[in-house]
Amino acid sequence: MSEPVIADFELPSTGSTAFKLSDHRGRNVVVYFYPKDNTSGCTLEGQEFRDLYADFTQANTIVVGVSRDSIKSHEGFKAAQGFPFELLSDKDETACELFGVMKLKNMYGKQVRGIEGSSFVFDAEGTLVES
Image (cartoon, rainbow, N blue to C red):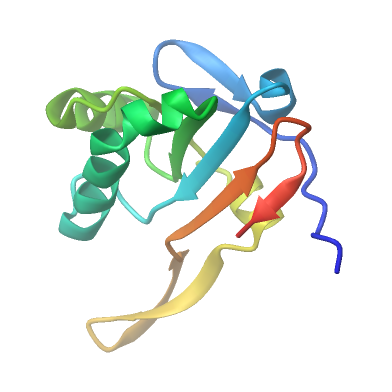
């Protein structure tokens, strides 16, 4: 069974740069989506990626986190948690739509549309190998 094809995307990134998926050919890429900076579950997930970052680096793999938060919010979250990887701002939900991570969720008894935490792994050729 072949994996779905994800179109290339470009998003603003911490570190005053832009992240474009195709710019990272030759390395494995983990793209993880999370709902919101500075929330307990999202903080724990980011800390896990941080704590395993040396293993990812040794495996020729970069990690990026994506949420709808602003770059300013991301910069503070990244600094507070000591994340060695970049966080991408998807305010317009461009990548969220490409990856199909926008879902209806229940929050305090109301249905809201938000990011469902998800991770995607691309190999060095840019092929989606795990989601």
